[in-house]
Amino acid sequence: MTTTTWEDLVTSALLGTDRRPPAADVMAPGKDAPVALLDAAALHTVRRRAGLLPGPAAALPEPAPHDDRPPLPGPARRRLTQLLADRSGASSGGGRRGAAPDLTELLPQWLAAANEHGYRAPAAALPALLDTARARTDLRPAALTLAGPRGLWLARLNPEWRFALRGAPGGTTLPDPADEDAVRRLWGEGLFAERVALLGAVRAHDPAAATALLASTWSTERAEDRLMFLDSLRGGLSTADEPFLEEALADRSRNVRSTAAELLSALPSSALALRMAERASSCVGLDRTGGSATIIVEAPHECDAGMQRDGVLPDPPAGRGERSWWLGQLVESAPLSLWTSRLGGRTPDDIVALPVADDWRDELHAAWCRAAVRQRDPGWARALLGPATTPPATGPGTSSLAERSKLLSILPGDERAVWVADFIAAHGLSEAFQLLGVCAVPWAEPLGRAVVDALDIARDAGSYPWSFSGVMGLAERCLDPDQADRLEVLTALPDEPEGASPGAGSYWSEAFQRLVATLRLRAAMRAELSPVATPPAPAPSGG
Image 1 (cartoon, one colour):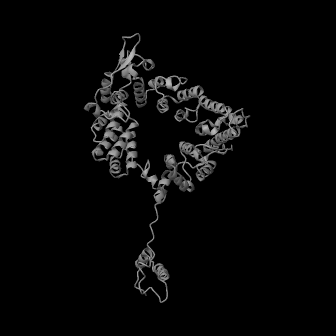
Image 2 (cartoon, one colour):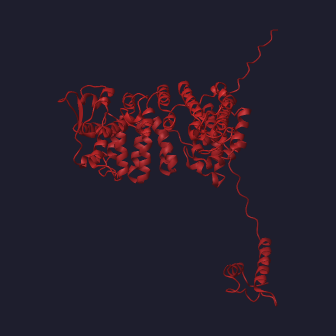
Image 3 (cartoon, rainbow, N blue to C red):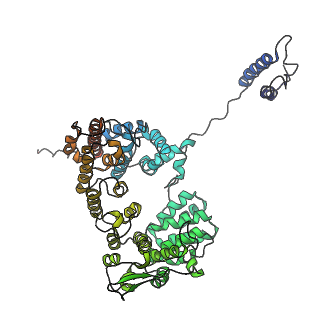
């Protein structure tokens, strides 16, 4: 037996036998120190393993909860296995992608469709489903919905899947919103995501109770949590929230004050909106002294304490003038109904068409755009968008495609699709990508036809298809799958026009082959998810 411990050997190994030679009881005559150290370590290892006592058996986990949702049909179950197994991320921003559909881009649609039918995930697919949700945060809500209570049960057994317990709706079953004791217990003890989900559930059941619940701990919440809780009030916002939001205007956090002011300004009848209307009306008026009516603007000369309490930020961003910064915040927070009475009873279309003196037009129209989005006013959105055929730089509202996308999101789905289709027909695809992103899927027939026609025109022009890879990818996911047969003609190899890019025709043929194959695959996926009809019971035979 030696007196050298395992820790002594580890120290010698870390420092080196030159600096920390092994003890004398380890060293054998004629043996080098490193060899003696390794021999002693081997001996200690055997001794440590032989002396290990078995630990107590761990308790068995609780059984997995029951999930009474219907199972996936057999073909859809096999399709899910295929989609989860394809994690290559084959799609790329450009270059040649081949003619095969990109399964990674179809998984979000498949999950959404499966959840619409109310299916449950197969137990065998849960590990791969959780792995996919861990790798792709965009899929987590849909993947966890499909995984259901058994997915959460499994996530508790693997630290790598603990993200599922933190995401909405959380790893805890929410109590009945009418059970006040259980609600207050989870509100006081739950994780943040659980508390957000709980607040939403209580708000859907009893908005006043949700506001009271939030107010009960408001003063003790962290600033970032107060901001997130306020943000969760956007859904179902009503005048009943006004007293609480008015109190939040005095919050110690500037971001919380600004968010409270933004929410109040989305309520046109709120006291804040009326205060903003009074300030904005003193800055914007109508001049009738000339030959035609003109909007005149006198921006604020100061940002007083009252304006700041109502959410007006005093310090502009770099490169922005103070007065224009203050004016924009006042106008975007004022009720849009103000301008009809203030500007001679005119409609939104008439108001937007009026000239604006002293180069204030862009600032004023941009503020009206933000107000239309905040107040969800389709009449003002239409006026500010103007005709789709008008060049963006000379349109009545804003030339910003991001702002136009927000305005479009307010319009009904069919109207939105027609507007974007007309925009593409007039201006092509180069500026349409953001606009396409707000259109309902599958695209309505006029929009789908406009996109395909524009791609066909681009092919005839002789450019490479990857110049339009973003739009082509959207088309694969958003075109109506029933259009596949009609688009088959585009897969043929075209004659290359003079001056075309070398090989562009074959690349376009390949791109359209992928488009058609993807549409057919989406159609097959849709059919596989359709519930299998139960055959009627045979009629009893007469006796």
